[in-house]
Length: 96
Length: 506
Image (cartoon, rainbow over all chains, first blue to last red; front, side, top):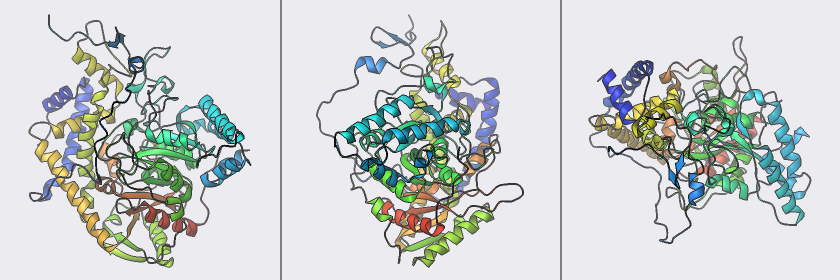
């Protein structure tokens, strides 16, 4: 199942990457090359094999339900490229 | 004074603790060599003022009679993927470089993101009185095997400046090999500590998954990422791992298991340990000079009283395919946070809507390899392909892990080459992503299985007409949390090698 140009554009949209025309061509070629290679996994019969999502995690205990200080507003905003009235600034995204 | 930088971490810390050396002397020597070694491009940021202030604080602490920590006055570099409050953190990416403040946008790591907190491992280094001298160059977001995906140019291999240092923790390996720091931290997701350690001729440890906190490590693939140390000798690496290991309430995947006595393990007898040799790691594609060096090191272990026997890891060849599905899927999700809103780069015009702010910022901020992996990861997770790719890869991951579980029923550790080739030339593989991925063939399976692994130098390749003598790494693999055993074996190999090899130093 080769990747088409439309596949690349669709995935780029999902990933929020505005690729240039040149990049779309390049990525289509590269992804097809990589997927050709990874398709070798289909040689293996894995119908009765469970999926591994995580390894060596011995335990993941809950922490105590105790409040602790969080990042102060000023510090949280200190690295933002744009802020407005004590918050992160984003373009309007609700249609009027 | 530069000879203080030739000491091991353990010896240097002892001298600072005793007052034979001051932390300031050591730090000044390190900063001077860093200055002389700018052409290696090992560090993206030199924390000169912060390092001198930290050194003075260590000296003042001693003057007051307070006991000093295990890394007293030791100059350390940390990969630029680790958050540091007193130095920018860019992951060698333009997207974590701020616009403004006289910076036209995304070319200067000194204008990088300033994290509001230290990574847990950084906090632990500071608590042990180490001196952070700078942030190490790397492949952008730890994606690469040569350091060439850095937005700020590659680090150069100190053994031959025309060759890569390996990656992704390129600068961390170079900093230690070239004596800019006595130790460093990197991160290893599929070989990013072990492979550059091998190519630069230093010791590099990928701890078992969960051994070291990931809090404050910018995430690439969360089920694989581990922070680990580089050093020029095994015992120094052991001490560094001891300092950074252990349960951290801020990382729920960090293991609540006692930290081993890794340093003491370096003097333990290895007699009777069973070493497995998997034929899958010695086949086609392995440079003959590396095969010979590794086999001769293994013969040394046999002479030291270890039993050497063959084991089988039949799913080894599926490691690359499995890794590049699992890791890119996780990365595509982890890297969604870079959106031009809360930190870093932001590209917008007067009529930008939110979608175009995201799309333009991310396309301008990420380099080609990062985009390639985000696209691949998004694709393998997308509707219609999830079962065929992502689910399939997770199942094969089980088979790879099972290979190791079965092998470790018969042997205590496995010895293999770290990299199929010595350091390759800069530019050699940049246009062929798949060829670059193949460089990680021997390191990926251990990452997928979450087991303990380290790379230790063995005999370098002989010089030929076309290449100088280059370092070779032997990789030791052990069951999860068997780091002590690996340190015993690595220290034995090091003793048999006799004295570490050093590249020409500035």
